[in-house]
Amino acid sequence: MISAQVDWCPWTDEMVQLLGDGGVLIFDSVLGLGTAASTFNTVLKLAQDGNLKHAGVGRSGNLRQDAAIRQDLITWVDETNAHEFSRVTALFEGVRTAANEHCWMGLKRFDTQVALYSGNGAHYDRHRDAFHGKSSRTLTAIYYPNVHWEPTHGGQLRVFFADEKVEDIEPVADRLVVFLSEVLDHQVLPTHAPRAALTAWFYP
Image (cartoon, rainbow, N blue to C red; front, side):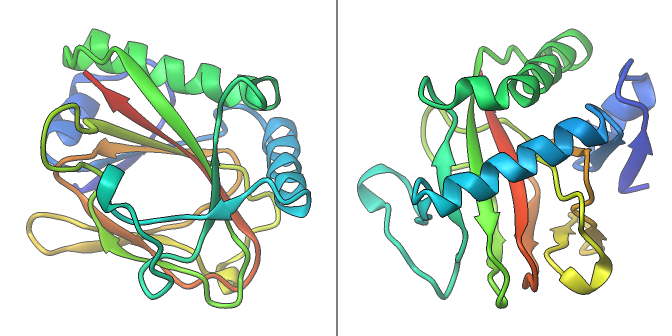
């Protein structure tokens, strides 16, 4: 098994083993469709107000924009917008707590990024979330609020496992996806309708 669609809590021994083996945990109906819808509308409004910027690739001094690789618009959850994403942030705190309690990961903090793929084929090429060097990302959690998503809209999360198996995960509303940042390559397939995601990266 390379992914598992399971209840949010508690994390079982089988789930911990799957995560540790480089698999993906998929949780559905974690916050409710009402929260998903309001979160999706908040992301759209951020874009309409010009508060989302073109994403870059790389780290720190090597950060650059390359539309051939990545075409989403982003911002970060901070003091200016935290109240609008408080329920999602609380969910991510629950991920941190569960990972520490059941996987002994020692995660101390996380950053949360808001991303919107506007459609028109926008995508993100194959990549890995962890950077080389100190203070790298250890765990990735993605919350999808896409209440109107359907397969023809594209934007599936394609994950590449160590045995070269590939799986496409649909970015449906109120879904949470969790995997190890340092081991799993993934990409966002071309999107043909607005597709939002909130991603938390956890650090030890």
